[in-house]
Length: 102
Image (cartoon, rainbow, N blue to C red):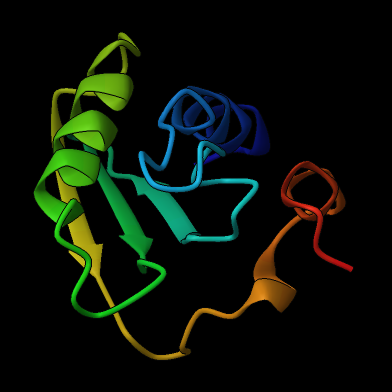
């Protein structure tokens, strides 16, 4: 997968807003990796802010919907991982400023 496709996928995922925090999952640092196979399978390796996140199914559905907007994507697989654990250090400068975190 080339950098342009990776950028397109991450751009699409910036439209997925964490319902609790109101910031997109890319700037929150929840997305660890994106890949696209030659067959059009988009694989997203990501985490959530907490293991007990009750909105996990909603976020996964939004990820699937966002990536299916890209013509190259035929199918989406979301892998939720807990290692490495998410922390506020994963957040972009923008997300930290928006949430008032230093």
